[in-house]
Amino acid sequence: MRPFFFLREALRALRRNAAPSLAAFATILITALVLGVFIPVVRAATAKTNEVRNKIELEVFINDDATRAEVRELGNMISEIRHVESIDYISKAQALRILRQRLGEKSSITEDLPGNPLPRSYRIKLDDPQNVDVVKSGLQPTAANGEPRYISPAIQEIKDREDDTEKILSATSTIKILLASLAGLLVLASVLLVANTIRLSIFARRREVEVMRLVGATNWFIRWPFVIEGLLVGFVAGLVAVALLWLAKVTVVDPWSDRFALIAAPETVEFGLLVVVLLAAATAVSALGSGITLRRFLRV
Amino acid sequence: MAAIDETLDLAGTARGTRGRPAVELRDATVVYPGGNVGLDGVSVAIERGEFTFLVGPTGCGKSTFIRLLLREIEPSRGQVFIAGRDIGALPRRKIPKLRRNIGVVFQDYKLLPNRTVYDNVAYSLQVIGESRSTIKSKVPQILRMVGLSTKLNAYPDELSGGEQQRVSLARAFVNQPPLLLADEPTGNLDPETSLGIMQLIYRINRAGTTVIVATHDSEMVDRMRRRVIEMNEGRVVRDQMGGGYRA
Image (cartoon, rainbow over all chains, first blue to last red; front, side, top):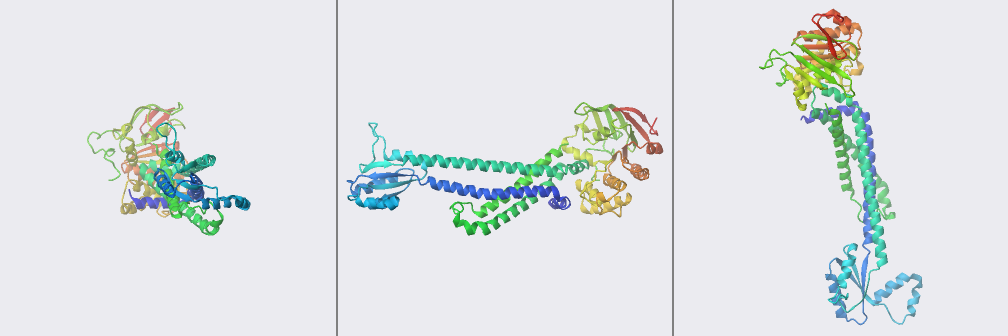
């Protein structure tokens, strides 16, 4: 293989016959732009969904007559259960404050209470909301007689806001499935679109390929310039798309980011990574597409 | 010479192929998909250095004959030999090498539209991996021979039909293939220009190349008095040395 010869051939084709390559260029550019916008949005939405799911927690209420030592020991026991990520101790005073906050304007009714009837509690954060049942049975294992028993007499009750948990879990997984299928469809459409454009641009030059075969060029001798041309077109299209995305990021997204919850989400894709992915995908799809499509016209 | 591959001994130097015809068809039959018969049991041998006209009405099988020799198509039955070698037995990857040993000229010239005259001719040398210096000396030389030394940097669409056909001839002959095939080379040209093209082909033949010309040009055939193979409906109906367009 003579790389410089093939590179010159590719450049010649681009210079002398730019129209078909231009169509491929435009298609790849637009596809890369759409993906460049869509990928961060999906990532941000997924991150937000995960954030919501992570709000799922268990609350263990403590008997008022439990001693401080018992409460501390219960805390240690809970921490040791698998899938427990962290625990928070809520004192009676804190519980009352939380309740007042929640009641808002109507918080005055708590002033009529004789003392503080709210129990102390532990709030348990899970490593994954799916494991809620595992942790629950860790707190309340089945004893020898088949009856479930709390691991400590200090426990008065365990609550997991079952309704909320169910709802959050099903809603978030629906969102995740929707996003995933949307992303899949978009990628599929992109690949088909790019493949079709490349096919058209090569079809426009099939007579050229025929002549090359007739003067005895081997398949790879014909193919390399096309592959290199595809490589160049894909790379430049990817580069332009990235430049446009960067412009949009600097002028629109960054100044406004505090207004959009999604964009401000902690886990959007890093711009650098996005750039690399888009460039690599554009280049590879374009080069491979050209090489593979050509095969049809290379059959003897 | 780099152009000649050892597997295709058209020059007849290797043992075993010496004395075999340049081109030989044995009972070659071509049936196109759809049932059209291109060639119907054609057996013919063309000796090295011969100049042969292939004549007959449109659709008689002339082009099929040419395409068979290039192995663009394969016979449904029978065999095709070039320099004593059954080209049907050539593996697919050897086909480009076969074609490098055959110069071809078509009615529609088949030049590469995005290349200059110089680059079109150079391409068939680049294909066989000739060095740049060889290309630089050979291409202007052959273009001088066909009378186009002033048009090196023109593109095909800036040339007349006759000029394009001369570029095509230059490309076909630049690596001096032992066999030259021409399919209606003067089909699109006026009589005077045709004469110039045919004279070039004749010159190439005199230099030792076996030439097969498929043509409708009765005037040319009658004037040159060479071997004439007349075909009709895929069969050879006449094979005459020094013949005219009609028997």
